[in-house]
Length: 385
Ligand SMILES: C[S@@+](CC[C@H](N)C(=O)[O-])C[C@H]1O[C@@H](n2cnc3c(N)ncnc32)[C@H](O)[C@@H]1O
Image 1 (cartoon, helix red, strand yellow):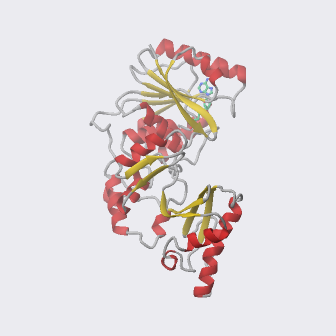
Image 2 (cartoon, helix red, strand yellow; image 1 turned 180 degrees about the vertical axis):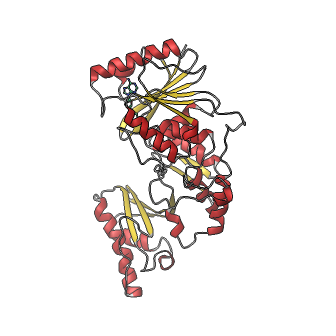
Image 3 (tube, protein in one colour; image 1 turned 120 degrees about the vertical axis):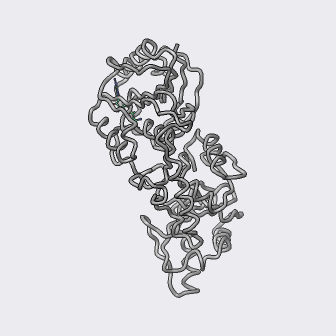
């Protein structure tokens, strides 16, 4: 499962990390992996929300089909003995199953009824920290049952305790940076950086920091720790293989860009001192504070380092923050300042309001549709002259 708009980029990411038969879908990517690659994706993929493991696809026209399909999907004695807790998630819908809550109950009931018959006991449902998470996806006449091996959504990397208003999700931010082609070899500037998500994700990418490692982990790969994922509690979890992948992921961390050159300035600015402090705390927790130069300030005294470089920007766009007139003035000033001071640079701006982007008085050379928290947005590229 990936953010809408990032499917093709995520497919390329998964393929590069060892997945095969990769196919972008809507808000998701289908692929095949072995266990090692499944662990690797959890450690290194920056774009997915979750990585589901397919169990079964079956026709599902009513409750009997659902019960039979679920019970036949897998060896439940092994995967769900009664001392293990579960949670069932349902997505999609079909005419026979209009209410996902009741569908989830039907899946759970099929499993616990069988357990009662067989063991005289049943699994409990645990919403917060279950041993096994099942995911049922319904479409017309058909169901797909999967295991959710991720646990907490993968966009929560663990570095962001502090958030400004309207923060980007970490995986969306990583995808936006991915579109720019940033590789840590040019200066990077975010003039409205908020809690710093774009810059922290960019720095992590430039420096080879795997998002699935504990952020306070040891610098020596052999001592690195991976974050805790749902598949750690699966009966076929292979601890040695996991360890191998953790060490391999930790060994990717560098103090330089991939070609060995020093990473130039990564500058974040925001008018609000509180959010700049949050950005600093987040960067610190991510182990990336030394690479970020965070400044309190507006556009008047924005002085970019020698370029050319890359400006990334997620300015307020009015759905959640700011008044219309003030916002138009902000965009006009942003366009002016960047035209005057960043000739030769490339700007990527996340727009949720076409009217506001007009005030920039710049012409976009690429427009990539993405969704930010349900708001239809465009990630716009401008070549500043
Ligand atoms: C949508 S938020 C950015 C969120 C950020 N991408 C994150 O993930 O936390 C927009 C930010 O622009 C800042 N801002 C508004 N007007 C500004 C100005 N004139 N100069 C600099 N920053 C400004 C706000 O303080 C706010 O933090």
